[in-house]
Amino acid sequence: MHARHLRARLKGWGGVGAMAAACALALVFALALTCTGSVASQRAGDEPDATRTTQALTADAARAADDCEAPEKQTLAPSRADGPTIAAIKARPGEKRKLIVGVDQNSYRWGYRDPNGGESGRLEGFDIDLVHRIAEDILGDPDAVQFKAIPTDQRIPAIQDGRVDLVVRTMTINCSRLKDVAFSAPYFRTGQQVLAPKSSPVEGYDETLANRKVCTAKGSTAYAKLEEDRRNGDLPASTDISTTVPNQLDCLVRLQLGEVDAVVNDGALAASQAAQDPTVELKGEAFTTEYYGVAMKKDADDLVRRVNQILVDFRQDTATGWEASYTKWLSATMDDDPSASRPPTPEYLRRS
Image (cartoon, rainbow, N blue to C red; front, side):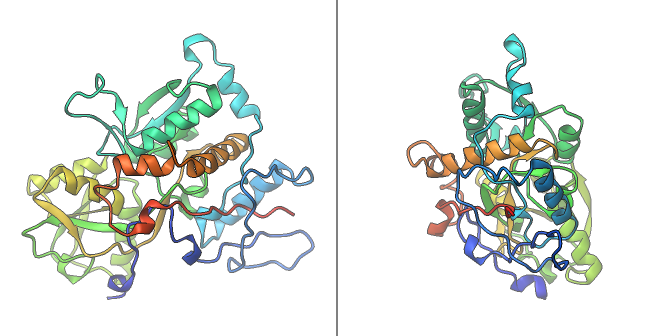
């Protein structure tokens, strides 16, 4: 089956050189190009060209979202400058002067409350480290954060309704979501993978899922992929994909209760779930390549640029940055591929 031949190892920021070419930007007075062109890289930390307005770049991003092959590259170049979005955050009075962030509190090693107590149930994990880094950069205090636990299918509505400033919740950047929200450059690479009991005859994302019940989270890329592949014949028609839940961890519970036969989830999350339950394991290799990004409102261009600059700094900080956080939270559960602990060089929308 076609899906079985898609190879994507669980990785961190590595392997960007093998990405598909990004969508070329539509240029005035030029021939209209299809989404087979390239997106030029820009040096990290460069300030945006004064002749290239924020509005024009936003329009470029909107066009790219309509027809793109490399959504992880459809983001704005880094900048340290404050704008209206950041100014509004900084203007919050007194104790309300905090960054409001949508996160998960149930994803082991990503965003979760230590079941053993920890620091009074303090949220911790890889995503949480990144949130503290963003808050420190924007507000000067890593703890100036109001965390809001949101389910998978509420990530985009929470941003659009203004309930949160941004979402840092293992959220995959894809073309469909780019129509509704803006994303930072990617901060992690993963891929969809199958999780099932060790004793299960399920071998991976293949014909062994025939006549099996598979659980996914509502609003997840996993469900969209299963639905598309079953429609296209790349997944057995008898595979039952009707079981969807608000959060990824709920699928693990359904699996433990015997209500489903397998779970399809981001491999990075599935690996953490396997670490929580020694009776389950990852089956087969990842069958997609996906990238996590920080999500924000579409018109929050200054915040997008600032987060991208923070990610540049986070990546380059070998003492307390991306690599240190990866080692602390994820190295024990991730693939032993050395490139999994190396971040990629991001690419941004072209300046003209």
